[in-house]
Image (cartoon, rainbow, N blue to C red; front, side, top):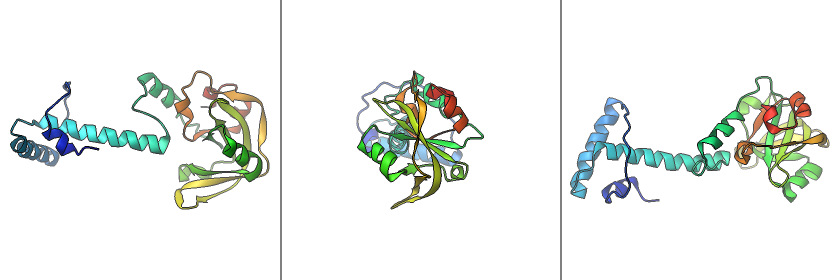
Length: 211
């Protein structure tokens, strides 16, 4: 990735839109000094706005990479409608007892379900773990829905990834009477853990009814 200073020193190639922001005094002083220094180096005017714009660009790029890695959500290509759908699935059920974990429709999922009886490497809020009694598995395309859940026996940190956890089932997974389907929700809305109740899971026909 090209360094922000190098981008500022290069000739501008994109149009800009104005916006107003306020900065702390120390931050503004640094922006002013960067503007003067870089203008001297580039032998042209690099305004304070250009410096701030580059800072925002760098933060945006790094944030997009982080969100993709941590939440498996491609915010770069997402539309505002996608974000609204994603937000609607993040509403917290205050009395949740069930975590919904994402899975790909592959052999690893079937092995975990039928043989390992555990789901590993789950990035989950440590403060929520003690409230969880059940684990439901949302399986991506072509299944695109929830068919199984299991009672949680215990959890423990994943090997070499202490910020993630292994969720061990208490016996076999239970198949729902019918699949809870994704419906009109965007698939990205189910790429990280979601929380609901077993009661809602047993009654729902659509994923959106779980939140």
